[in-house]
Image (cartoon, rainbow, N blue to C red; front, side):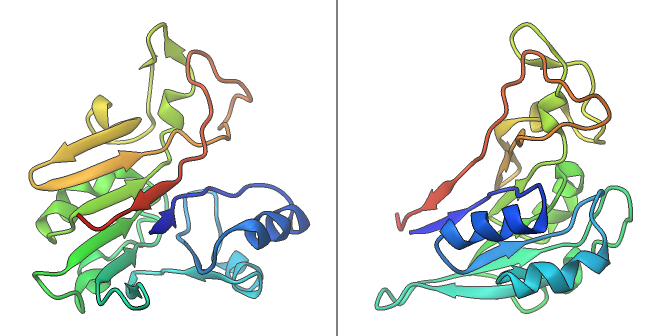
Length: 185
């Protein structure tokens, strides 16, 4: 099984300590509060940053392959390139996409990704009772703001994360660190 989906925030030493506890390899993508200048430090910690590219994950002895692609920030910097990320993925292969935001769900489905993992929305961060977000700061349907969702044949998951944005508070939206275990059917 592979574990996917941990958002790391904090000082470089704190992040280095957290990464060292994770099963390697660790993959990441940049988001709207991240800078390309962070890449050398992240890579020196062992994080493989996927910048509009894909890699192949193979389980030793299982003979199964999963293609994992990642796109650079599609929200603020608009430097995502799904076509480039997907160009070397065979049509029939199982493919996963890491994106900071769910906003590019239509493009991801059109590129035939099977699963999309994302965040950015903070689940609304400030929600009405029942977890109904007041705003998502993301151009997508509200039900893409947190948890499992699907669009056409693609499944997706949006983590609400553990951080905050603008206002250092969460209401009716508990923080989460999401770990997905991928198992062969």
